[in-house]
Amino acid sequence: MTTTIKSLSGKVALVTGGSRGIGAAIVKRLASDGAAVAFTYASAQQKAEALVQEIEASGGRALALRADSGDAIAVKGAVAETVKAFGGIHILVNNAGLANLKPYDQFAIEEFDRMVAVNVRAVFAAVQAAAPQMGEGGRIVNIGSINADFNPFPGNSLYVMSKAAVAGLTRGLARDLAPLGITVNNVQPGPTDTDMNPADGPYAPVVSGMIPVGRYGTGAEIADMVAYLATPGAAFVTGATINVDGGTTV
Ligand SMILES: NC(=O)c1ccc[n+]([C@@H]2O[C@H](COP(=O)([O-])OP(=O)(O)OC[C@H]3O[C@@H](n4cnc5c(N)ncnc54)[C@H](OP(=O)(O)O)[C@@H]3O)[C@@H](O)[C@H]2O)c1
Image (cartoon, rainbow, N blue to C red; front, top):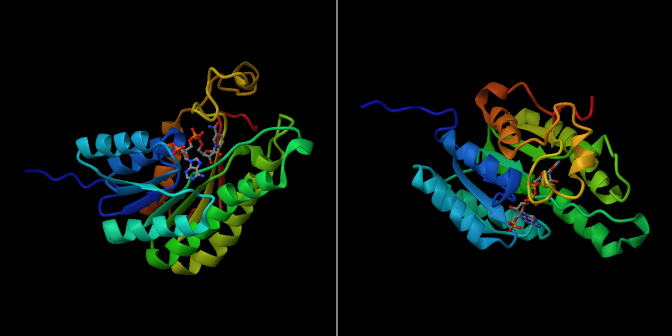
């Protein structure tokens, strides 16, 4: 009998916002690389359960946790549930995110707070809960956006702000956690075909024209970069912001 050792065998991961889109692609990739993967979702319980079943059917281990990233206590609770279920945590992917475009003068202050809570505060809360459990070799990957550096549309001020904050938080945390042997990186997708930004949606004709490779990316292509950053071989990459965008920002 031969046993295949996969690149993430024996590792435990938590992916926030993992029931659909980029997050689901990351969950599948980390599971197929051998990690036991917990993931959070906000409301789509059936999709989350279907993903768990899909991973288990191919011999992997997965756990769906309902936890609104707007609630820092729920986020920290998801880290605790992951550790309880799988015996530790080695990889944290902060993927859950909210986009909300409208003219700046039509945002309610509550919408500003919600954007910061989901896209920024949740990242910090998850890291605070997970890093002390990780130890040497821990891996944190934040999913930012090229919009942190490149904003071609009006009405995007709060999202741009939030993703720029994720890039800054990544740099600060990378320095704080380097002495513990934990890396922190920021993957910035370009236009990626998901429910949030469908390749056949209303913005698609204009957006596609901005992408040198001539098409939207896929969740799997973002997951490829996350999977690399999660490996032991990526130990010297920390504090980095890496665009996966088909050349959109060149
Ligand atoms: N798609 C793009 O073009 C693009 C480009 C750059 C960056 N990004 C970033 O990539 C990340 C994923 O985007 P996506 O396009 O895959 O989004 P998506 O298709 O809208 O999927 C979002 C996922 O996050 C979950 N989620 C949403 N709000 C949440 C909350 N408050 N708490 C917990 N989970 C929540 C959803 O769960 P439910 O199923 O329960 O709703 C779902 O699993 C986001 O951070 C986004 O800003 C996306």
